[in-house]
Length: 456
Ligand SMILES: Cc1cc2nc3c(=O)[nH]c(=O)nc-3n(C[C@H](O)[C@H](O)[C@H](O)COP(=O)(O)OP(=O)(O)OC[C@H]3O[C@@H](n4cnc5c(N)ncnc54)[C@H](O)[C@@H]3O)c2cc1C
Image 1: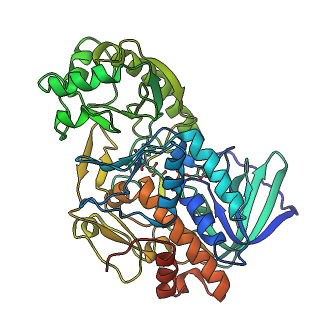
Image 2: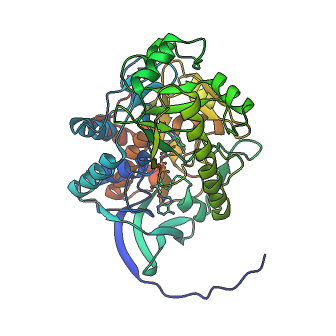
Image 3: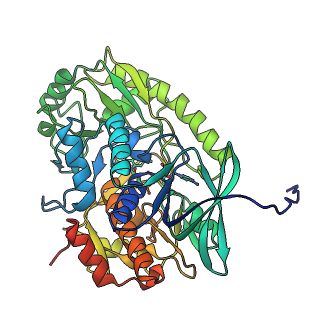
């Protein structure tokens, strides 16, 4: 590849903070809030887009709040956030679901607004429209990051950094050992979500409940869908088959759509582009282009083959193609699928998750779910990169196998991990210790005080 030499240059230091959070998705906002709630901690959150929430804004339900036994496993700041949204009529209850364990619908715009309010309330300095492109290192210790914006290149120095970029951008540039996808190097495919309105939801629900022989649903008894309650339809394999026979080009084996906040609104999760590495802009661009094409075909298919969609129209398209999986760190402990199936307990637990291993196959258009019998601990060591100090991971870039990530990546656990990472970073600053040396008992006590749920 042709290269050029970039000359070294002096750049301004824009800010100096105690805790710098990179990325304002579900992990990042909880990390920033949790850190800022430790008195005297100066916290900054940087985000490349013009709003907070990351994948909370693309029309997805929050998964993972209830465990297999029906109890709330995600509490603390994430639950407080959902309860505040619910008071505004912008989130539903946690509906139990035989397939996805529980579903909590949220309004994307309400989410963005409330997250702003929370950041202001707890004194987090938010900087939008800046992309973290590099790190400031002293040996193996990260001392801050480099950002790029319309203003140019600037540095932000920080005593601790939390990488909530989803893709592990900070840790990758800090030289941490990163993993990608499965043993063949293939990651779960991305999806561009869109919503349809004008759906006759009563007709849809009754048709599915009354005619299970025609409208086949994966795993869940069809009757589950009759009440006007939040749900995700996964199935209609027969309809996909019929449509394909009629010439439709559909990327998935199953039809997947879920309730929005309005009665006639459904969010469609069906575009899929295998083989895309979203850390490469060429491939990300190609993925978006393919998803736009796929979604046009999918909308036509829904109107023709799914009862109730006859008069539906595309209402909103998510602001970006959602990325399920890219880089993740190799940490001091790698969470495994066996840990999930064994309901593993760890002395350094920072929270509990219960969501199944939910794998959208990197090759082909199908998906498999494997359930945890109850719930499992998330160890603090899975946030700590091997060999690099000053920075930890939170959200979907923590240390987990490809299959374990397919469970712990969803937004309930991502928020829970974010809260723990933020609290750990603030305690590290307070006690003047490395992130890996944080007193875990004190961290757990602080999280319990905030309402985080642990098993006895
Ligand atoms: C199509 C799809 C469907 C899914 N379905 C569900 C579902 O139904 N329910 C569920 O709970 N989970 C679902 N998930 C999983 C879940 O959404 C993600 O795993 C979760 O959002 C991860 O949270 P995060 O905070 O780590 O990352 P993200 O939500 O990706 O947030 C990362 C944030 O960092 C910002 N950022 C990234 N890089 C930089 C940078 N270099 N500089 C500055 N800012 C940066 C981004 O703009 C973004 O705001 C789905 C994911 C996808 C893609």
